[in-house]
Length: 73
Image (cartoon, rainbow, N blue to C red; front, side):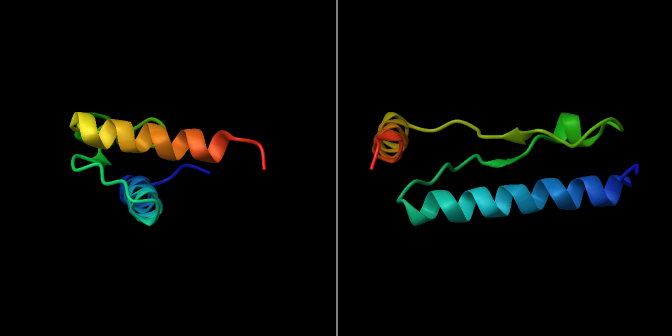
């Protein structure tokens, strides 16, 4: 099944929404999180998600959260 351009964009936007909510749930905000415009303009595969730029504090917070989640229970 081939997705239309609209379906591809909707899938990417939904992924961004879910990722933004999940990150917010652990106290992390990536201010530039968005659908990559260049890949969204293509016709092959799904668009890429641009995790964007963040400051050092955000990068360290994300590292802490990932480290905590990676520890065995």
